[in-house]
Amino acid sequence: MNKATISEIRKQFDKTLEEVHDAAALEALKYRYLGRKGKIADLFSRIRDLSSESRKEAGELLNRLKADLSAAIDARTAAFSAPREQRSYIDYSMPGYAMHRGSRHPLTQAVDDMLNIFQRLGFDIAYGPEVETDWFNFESLNFPPDHPARDMQDTFYTEGGGVLRTHTSPVQTRYMSTHEPPLRIVAPGRVFRNEAISARSYCLFHQIEGLYVDEGITFADLKGTIERFCRLYYGKDVKIKFRGSYFPFTEPSAEIDVSCFLCGGKGCPVCKQSGWLEIMGCGMVDPNVLKAVNYDTERFSGYAFGLGIERMLMMRLGINDIRILFENDVEFLKQF
Ligand code: PHE
Image (tube, rainbow, N blue to C red; front, side):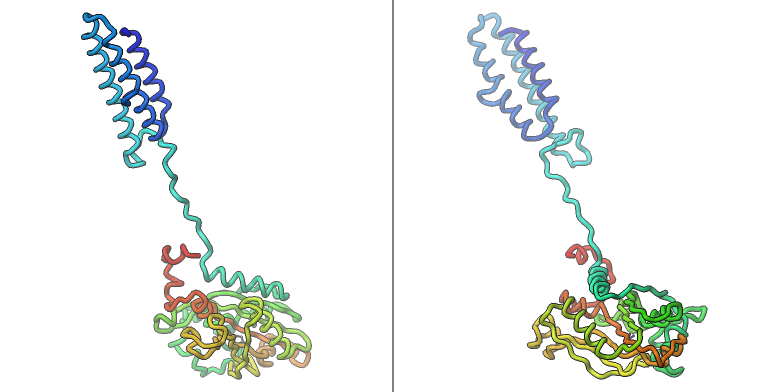
């Protein structure tokens, strides 16, 4: 052993250290050089083979080598364990940051799923504006001038005399005013009502409107389509029930209940032990509505329905506060 051996070892070490890119490789290098049976220990053990004059110098050289290698390894260890942003070396063995994948909002997913089904059943998709005229939102839909829904308490009015649509039904008359029958559309969208905000109601929510106008359309067509939709969306065992109701723009009118998809109709807290959930309003288009868009009421008839999305989704997801659907809380949305 001489000076040349020692500087050769130092060179080898420096070169290997250059190639170390992770903490595990650094540990292995340390073990190889500074371990109990490592290269340095080996050199120390060979000192006794030297002549007594050379031993002192070799000992000093070796001690310096050992100290330098330890320092180099410590420096690199520190570089690896520094916060990621401050590291001068990349440790390729570290686990990466998990990428969070975004997803569609549960409301968007529900609307898309429903629209898909309606498209398979032959419906086109139509859209209407969220700021409506009084004529489309009320007048054309046969609302008498003093109808309570026009009350300032329910409707948001804009400065120019428009209204934020209170339902998607104005898309019916909007679409009919630019299209001739036969027509079959669904119209998804946001609607607005000036209600006190609470766990059960929000100032905006979503609906899907349906409209089918042709010659000879009857309540049986409405019933068949709704039944079909409910089976495809809620499952084939779902039961549905029509309850007589009233809307200015349909005659006769009904509200539709589906058997509770959580308890299968046996009764649970979500359906308030009734076994049924109310999901939409519907009916045969009132001839006054067809007249408002100059359709021949002798020749044409139609049905319409309006589905509320939030209520249905709340029941399905087991959410008891509607506001969470509008808050964009990432912790909530991450689940979907
Ligand atoms: N527009 C009605 C509502 O918002 C629902 C409905 C639509 C009823 C179409 C009948 C026909 O409550």
